[in-house]
Length: 335
Image 1 (cartoon, helix red, strand yellow):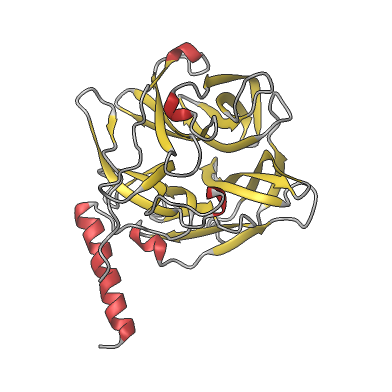
Image 2 (cartoon, rainbow, N blue to C red; image 1 turned 180 degrees about the horizontal axis):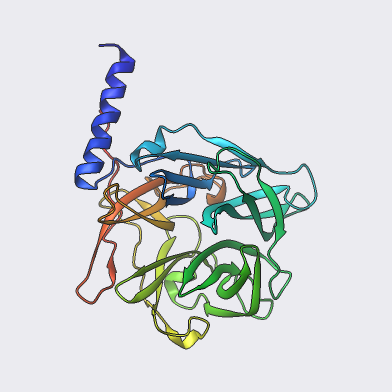
């Protein structure tokens, strides 16, 4: 058998394992941080995430989660040379809303590399790896301040945006905000703060709440997020609201005092976070998609260490209806 034949056989075996057990061979995709996976009605999983160069937006698709690692990425947008949208392109998320595709992402400027704003792209093609992506501009929020990691979800006929932003009057780097949306690139009404860094585990290195992701199950709405510096201290927290509550009322949300997903030396996984949610290939189980490193010691700024790899694992549910994410599983053994 040729080398290619052996590799194809191994890939097929991995995908069969995922289909039958819901377990995945991690990492799914190397050197892709802030992973977003969305399973569409066409049967494809669509993937977006930060590339180490922070200079472009790639998309890939596959019929299995494991297959995303083998899928050929398509570059759908590239940063500008100067001015807005010219530096540190972070955390693109692909969404399908009212018959069109949208990508939410953050970008800064070469002269201000960490003064990010949130931007939106739109594509009317059936396949978002094709067609034309149109820039819809930046999302206007309450302040002209550091803003990143926008995500969106629909609930009871209303669409919401959740994102991370710096309030000039609050100490720290970013808090989580929610607002109702007028259309996929415009918020309406007031933005409301849902969470700010306050617990010790949220304030290591940086005072950060970022990377929100929404999950609706069991009569509840869960918002996971990530906190602290992007090294081994990076971890996930969670906000919970009843599905019948007023989501723009901060009192509707309760916040976990401890991380719900964090580094695990026993499995060799460090800094898990900036997650998204999807489902298994048979649609019966929930899957947590996140990034993590398989080592603790980092040379230089963790932001420029490229080895935050995309990972996926099935998670279960507790008797009280809340998610049990467990611990980040170990890397697959090398063959």
